[in-house]
Image (cartoon, rainbow, N blue to C red; front, top):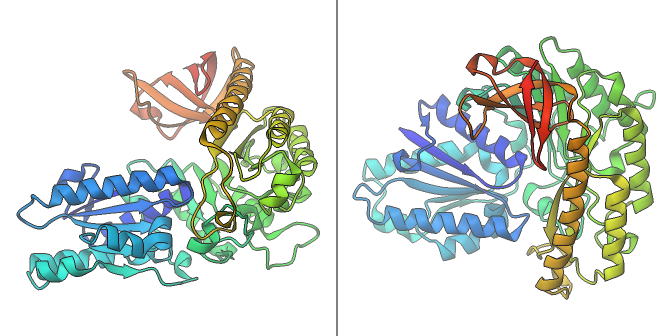
Length: 455
């Protein structure tokens, strides 16, 4: 039997999908990349942006239309993730032929739910009439499900070089535009020793790099008192830094409020902690930041950036920006542009504001026109393109250490890897290089990648 899993959204969703896949594998199923072969299809959804929701709904509608013409009443089709949690009942009404809906706090149950329905359909103990009545729905609260980590999840992956490790889940920062607290629950961390144990096992299975995941990753273990000014999150980084065979450590996404000096000082002192930080600004206007319930000012954010850049000349910093938030004026936007330039972000995710049902900002009047949102989006993207190109051009002619991750998407005998500061490098190699550290010289650059050669 085969399962196909399609993932929309963030790296946390990708990690959840890997865990779902591993649960299928442990039950004797195969994970397929060809949906037409699948006996079960799971769509893991995102609810942070409207576009991601629209893509998921479109995909589900297409799959249900396809199944209508299949004589064997397969595949089983289910939906999980943040959209399932936030809009589960709406999805059930709009697409009643879906077999199951499970929230992101139920990912550990998805394989069991899907296989049970699959077996009932094959054994004809689940009649077509009963199946069409209403999908199985489980979007109840469960604040311990994130701890049910399948320690063998990488068995379902084609490449084990870079591994995602969920260290916490949930959030209670309550940003006015964000749906995460509603769909992921309150902030809660895994035990430090549990995370260390998982990373050790991943390294034994071939991982060279880990990406630590959490909605507010640097708030990990915040309930545990700091020791000599060192937070539990930094102590976790120190323990991971001591693991033999692990080459690189990354994490996402942090919150500026928890980016304190002990974490800043970890860069340069922990040799495996890579010189790349994704630090969401959201807006450069203090007025809009306050409206967003972001508990810092633009100047405070820029001080963190300055301290990080002082730790390493190769430091790369990316960010998230929302343009067109309710009541954002042209002056507010220009303050965002100025902060964006001062921080000299070389990567960014720039979004046009769209209200999310269930958030505080959804109660506001979305009074910025689509045309203005698009204009501001394009203007800020132009700034980003220049800053990204400047960052890449400064790397031309220099040599960098790269972890070879996989085949490149284009080009014969072309492979892809990343520098410590997270720049994508494309170069000629062969399969034997995957998982190895190599030195590459940068020959040329585009906005998104570096053209390199192994030296």
